[in-house]
Image 1 (cartoon, rainbow, N blue to C red):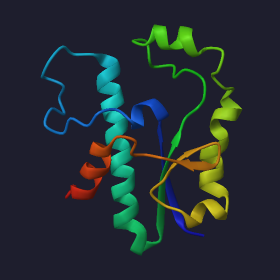
Image 2: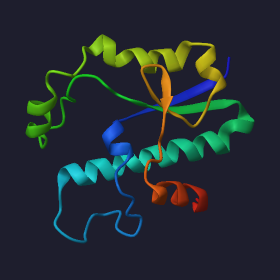
Image 3: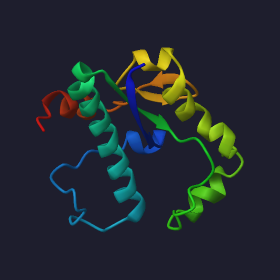
Image 4: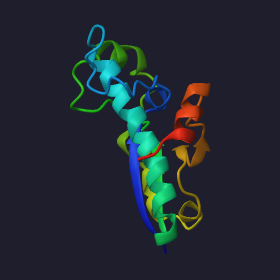
Length: 138
């Protein structure tokens, strides 16, 4: 069995704009939700990079949409909770994909993907995302 690492992101945040020239969010008006989305976008980029780098060592790395209940530590997004409370999942439903990524044989054969409900989804929706992923040099 291959070693595995998984990160959690949000489908909305994975598609946030890249601002690699302003990682500290000093330009413009600061927004906690924008900073959070950028951090999760960065985590998706790192997930893809780790998958590429660690493939020769047999390490599988994927990200998944957490798709669970509102995170306890997030207090700056009350509007998000109000709007999405009907579609948020139970903790068990939210944990299903990450447990599957950690344990299922078939999940150990794919690396560098963004998963939701045990299926891979696009991690680069905007053309600029794909260009940045292609030219990154960590």
